[in-house]
Image (cartoon, rainbow, N blue to C red; front, side):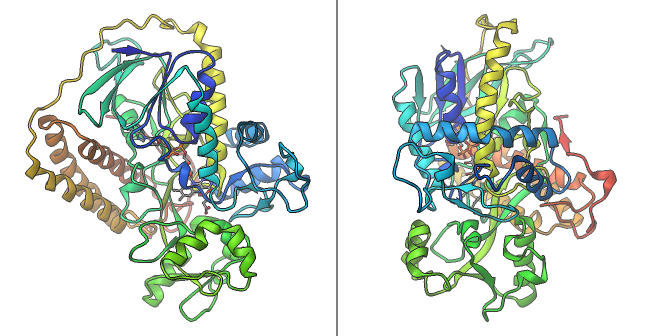
Length: 539
Ligand code: FAD
Ligand code: SIN
């Protein structure tokens, strides 16, 4: 058993940012289940929303966020996070993140706020998105990892998967509950380690993989959310799953995103005859918030029977397009689409979980010693629909605030450094019948398909109920596997996906209205008496 001052689970922008700060004050274990650079963060394209221009203001950014959030954002939290932006962006720049500069900017290091190039995305009333061409996340991840690698007090556990939290109640104590440690699977050896810490920070990202079509990479299986739920933390707003309107539609492309910034730079959505349709749905047209654009594409596809819609940026100069969106241009070209000359075939896909483990504005969950930051958390910033590029902002803001709040509270924590509870070693089932693996893959596929078909962009109560019934059966089957078989990554992820799918469906059934990303044909209007976050507690 190893003891750390901090255990951080996840190496995206939230986990890396927190670990760097925490390492100044104690030992840090950074647990990450794939290569350390693999995360949703690494695929972020559009950029990070932050008020830097004299034509912009915190108030405008707050208002845009509240409008997108459809009445469910926590206004105080929104203000706090948005006003953190400039300081956190300065830190990223100091760490070496190269945001694009305005063409007119003088060549100097580091760039000042006035030098940064700004783009626009749906729902933003001003240009305020800082970016690094169309690979902003990769650039941020690169700079943060370089700093982590240079830090002696951070021990990085790559290819280690957090399995479950250890809490007082799990040990059978009836006093106020809190976390004491975490079980972690070494994916190479199959051994399960026990890590002891009074402060465990979930930075495990989202759960896009619960849907058949998603922009998210394979790591996004909702592990942190499922672990927190099993440990008894409160979960909020899980019905609000954001579908990104424009994922590349190509049989070999997997889940490649076409950034909203392409629309921000003037691309138009058209049908297969080149006709624009967004103006019929919203006066903001292509730059309406995401829920509106995704539903409009879905409706047009259903109305016309088309398999996709198209995003057309061919009216812009080819050099500009290739320079501004090099990753998108090259990837599309690999699939035979020259975006400077041809419209891009696009479909919506699951993209972001707006709900998550309920936290305060400092990342504290309802379980003492457990913190959640980044996409896994629900702070109240996103409400019923996240404003584009507010996610990277929230992750850096919460990483900072969480660290500061822990520093303030540590001296008052009765357990501080005295966590000597006997933590039991992991006990695993021993069966290893590989033939049974087919059931794991079957269940995995079934969950993802049923979520796509029954719990997608447009929902009905009957479909949600059908999904709930099927998920309960799957849950029983998976639980049986979990107890009898030696755990491995696939089985653990399947168990987590099933839990997260159930939480999404249960939350969606609770909300008897349509609001933001949750659209139910049986309750097509928003209802004032339902304007509160959905909250689930175990049992
Ligand atoms: P992640 O970056 O997802 O990191 C999660 C980490 O946790 C990973 O390292 C993962 O391996 C690890 N992990 C998960 N489970 C376990 C476990 N059980 N044990 C150990 N490790 C685990 N947002 C914006 O604001 N602007 C954008 O331009 C933007 N573009 C996007 C484009 C794409 C294609 C996608 C998918 C998302 C985009 N987003 C964007 C959303 C944004 O990227 C994410 O919300 C954000 O990066 C989440 O950061 P995070 O640190 O919370 O989690
Ligand atoms: C994008 O580039 O379109 C993604 C932005 C986001 O998810 O915030």
